[in-house]
Length: 279
Image (cartoon, rainbow, N blue to C red; front, side, top):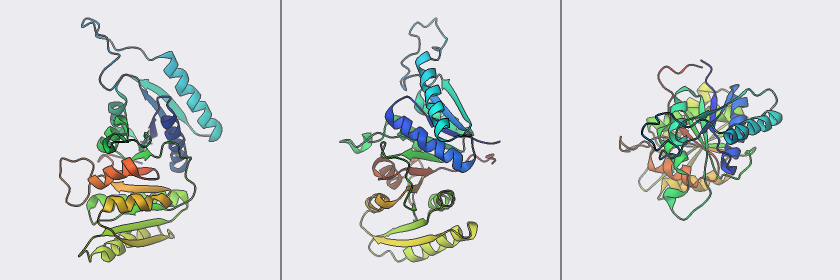
C-alpha cells in the first residue's frame, strides 16, 4: 500500500504554507499528496438542526475551488507531483486523525504566537499532533518558508519514543541531504548523556551509512527550553510522542508539547505507524 502524504487545507495562510511543506515531503518520499478539507466545524456546526434531516451537508463549491486552486499551484511548483483533493464531512481534527491511519505522513499548520501557551497551536493541530496514527509534521512558525539550511535536530533521553524519533530524524536528514544533530539535555547529576548519545548515534550511522551525525550535551534546568532554543538553527526538530517517565494517559509528552507550541522550526512528532503499515 503506497500511503500518501496528507495535509489539511482550509484556505487560511497557515494551511497553505502547510500544503507547501507537505508537497515537498511528498516529493522527497516519492508519495502522492492528498489535500483534505474537513468541512464541518469541530463542534458539529453545519449539521442539520432538524432531527428528521439525518443527511450531512454537501461539500461546498467554495471548498472545491479552494482545493483545486491549491493543487494547481503545487503541481506548477513541483511538476510531476500526484495530487488528490477531497472534502470530508467531519471536523478537521477528527478527519485528519482518521486519515492518519492510512497515511505516510500528516501535515498540519499552526497559528502564530499568542498570549497563552495552550492556545499557540490551533485546536486542530493539537488534536492531530497528540492522536495521530503516523508521523505528524507541525509547520511552525506558520509564515516561515520551506527551510533549506540547518540540521535535523532530535532530543535523546533514553526512552523508546526518543529512539523512534532518532530513526525518523535520520531518514529526514538523508532526504534533505543534511546533518543529524542528536541532543541530550543534562540536569544536575546527569552522567548518562554521553552514553545515551553514543548509542543513538551508532544506531543512526548503522542504519544510514554516510550520514553525518553530531552529538551534543546541553546543560540546562529545563529540557524543553533548551531544545526550543536549539531549534532556532534547525531546519526540523523531531520529537518523540512520549518522554521518559511520562504518564501513559498523556499522548504527547510535556517536552513535545512545548516544541509543537514554541519551536522556531517545523516539528515532526514521531508517532509509530500502525502494525500493518506497509511501504
